[in-house]
Length: 123
Image (cartoon, rainbow, N blue to C red; front, top):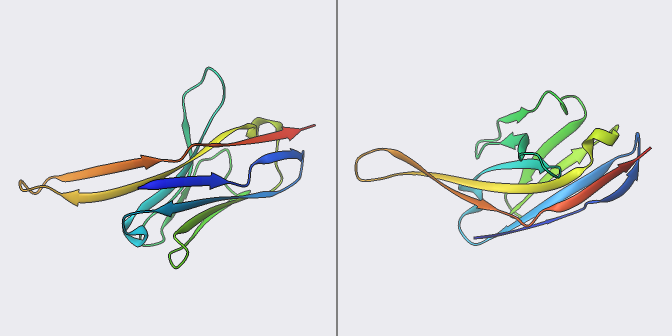
């Protein structure tokens, strides 16, 4: 399974951008998808998540400004970010998670990551 993130760049405060993540391999519709971001010296943090069934979750820092979506026909997830702030500056990573069950009936998650795309918000 490979994930290719794109759409990052330099944007001014208050601007918008849309990140895309194309997944190849596996069965996209079965994946729970997510976006995370990371700044130098800090841990990667969850930004938004969309389940295989379409349920969404947003971190408080982006709630109301971000929309995560997916297009199963295109094997692609998106993150629309609006009213960007300097603190949104980070490398954004896409994640795919597939949950399956082992012989013992225990849930096991296989996780895949993309390479990251840089978002820089200038003031």
